[in-house]
Length: 281
Ligand SMILES: Nc1ncnc2c1ncn2[C@@H]1O[C@H](COP(=O)(O)OP(=O)(O)O)[C@@H](O)[C@H]1O
Ligand SMILES: [Mg+2]
Figure (cartoon, rainbow, N blue to C red):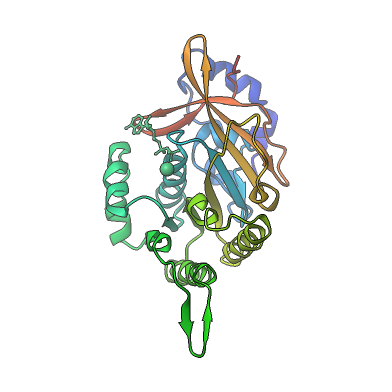
């Protein structure tokens, strides 16, 4: 366990971080000391420090909320990429919006070669975009079931199959919004999201469920998935006197005494970097 992290309060770490907005020191905790049976570290220093130095409790389904361009996809892919290269854990990426080829090509900019990881069966990318185009019911033997229900079932089946094939430990779904848009009625949406979360949870994978933020973060109407998920991470773009600031906030993470403050983050050429002791004014 991370005894040295507990002895070392976040604030002290942060002073060092805040000097020049760079991690001057080598990472404080040794990943090898994290109990990997209980936690899935994100491998992003600042994020894990906000989570008591441990990471996300295993098997949790964590909602990542944010407006477009905030870094949700980057965070998701970074979580999977780190899983493979830092923790030897395979991962599944479900794409409901972006084209897999485009995404893989974009991620090379961060130095993340998903082509290779896919070839090596470390990462599987499920292109679930056709879900958007099915409109009619599907005939299964004598019965026709609604296309939405069929889509949900087949998506969950596909995720399970791939996660067994790869013995995956991490899963990212990008994004839930495409899926939930098909359920304008609150009661149906609730059922569908519940089924999806249960289906995901049955894989045992630690999951990031990405979702577009509807409206501004302060005035937003809480969505049902925020109540159902085990954790909620909010990415925000804030306008300040000095320009745009990105804020990383852990709104909820059951079982973890997490940092509750919003912390600045940047998207760098190496991906997302969070500054866990910087304060946003
Ligand atoms: N190589 C890069 N270096 C720095 N920032 C980048 C790089 N590539 C993309 N970005 C930033 O990341 C943003 C997109 O992040 P993305 O994860 O796709 O957001 P979201 O999924 O929330 O829409 C871009 O708008 C850009 O600001
Ligand atoms: Mg995205």
